[in-house]
Amino acid sequence: MKVEGLEVLSEESHGEGGFLVVRRVGLKNRREDGSLSEPYICDFITRPKGEDAVAVVVYRRREGSVEVLMRAGLRPALRLGRGGHVPIPEGEVPLTLWEVVAGIIEKGDDGELGILSRAIEEVWEESGYRVLVDSIARLGAPFFLSPGAMCERVYPTCVEVAPDATQHPLQGDGSPMEEGAKTRWLDIDEAIAECVAGTIEDVKSEVVLRRLRDHLRS
Image (cartoon, rainbow, N blue to C red; front, side, top):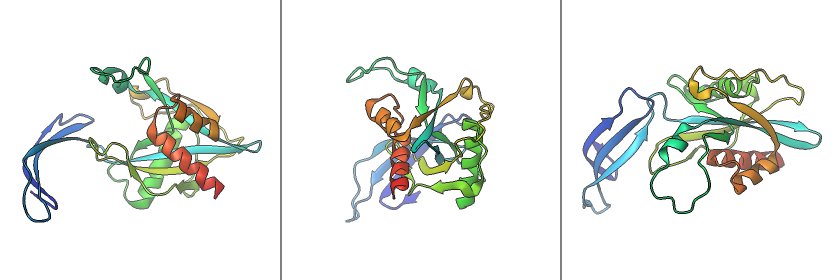
């Protein structure tokens, strides 16, 4: 396989049929002068269901302030995966994590309309609010979360709901991973402060919350 800047020597996959697949690729860097680096192994994760994701800040204006909806859901990988050396102990690893609404952009969610349609579906499943496609706003360019290990690109968006809008019971996607999820409203400045303090530890949430605050100020 020819890839600009790289020479692929070998490739194998592990975990086929699961939610994630680990790909192990043997590489050499192809330098500008045509020379090659020493061979090395690059391991990374792909997701057959869809490589990218959409993050949605659900917000409302209430009594002169902006409130954002945060959602707590199960994240077993945090509890099960953190072993070995921990440079600075930060207390017990959480089993649930506070995040903004987010979901995988699935195969068939094509183009801009596909991203926005996936956003409204995730808002319904994870926050209990019915919203329309034309109420979803983009919050700038997408970004990578962990480029050393994942190719996932996150598309940041937001949607405003009325202060008196009805919040229905959380539907989820039918997976046990979404059992017991709950939501809470926070002032946007308080939510960002919780990100800095570590009460909210999800980096995509901090990014989109800060982008929403800048968006509303402008």
